[in-house]
Length: 404
Image (tube, rainbow, N blue to C red):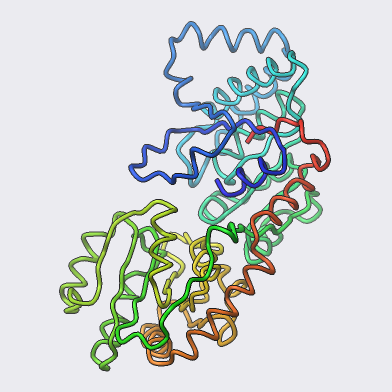
């Protein structure tokens, strides 16, 4: 959403195709600001069979060689959709046919698209690859975290071989891509940090002498976020005598398990699990916090974060952060400089770092100021949009339509 809004501010004309409806109960107010039309592809597959068959026949009539070669490609290589994802190769082909048909229609209006870009390396990138081959439009994709590490190397290589550029959000992901992809495959790998709006997330005055500092954490309640480690660390901090409160915002499959752990650790008077919040709710929570803590790790299924967006938002808000070195966090947070970083899963070290920020108001102020400076220098969403525009090859032309 942040990147789409920033690209639209730069004048790009975008059309969004989403594979499924999110069906989320919490939606950011910023979604209403997106001008781009949104097409829900799962709705197209639910339409009457005759209508879908007619779309396939029409595309086959216009591009018979492309259509048949890609259909054979998906039949011969069903493993293209292996690993993390929900769509078979043939379902991805059906989705791509619908997108290609709409793009062909847009070309007939004289305002046709110039590029297909997919967010996430699993199903979306496979659909983008197939759309690119059906339409002969250049194709690129962004790889984030689980979508990158949980698809087979051969599937990743197939997507990368078709792309003009592979974008990712941190150097660790870029290194993984370079290690995993065959040498000389071709497409450049570019790191473009997920930026935040520096106007929306800003430092606010905070009382350095507050008696009970408020910690805030935001994230899905899943294994890779390490919330059980955080609760165990906070139990140590409580036993050590430090005063604090901690609000955890987010929801997920571990909610009940974490509530039971909170009870066993006697933290119900200190820690609240407050459920999911919109982007605006997160911003408000950060404004009322004294420090931010997030303790991610690599999950048993290899799922991990790149650079969590909420860490960038917290630092943009001028908060001192306590985190771990899992994923790409050390690219953003430098221990002792603009935050505190400890090894993932190291509960005593997490507890020690939390105690530091609780007990040292001067440290909180110093780390928070350095955190804001880091985000201003390297994580401005408008700077990210300028770089994406350059990579897309659309810089200087504000009338392009870029399917995403």
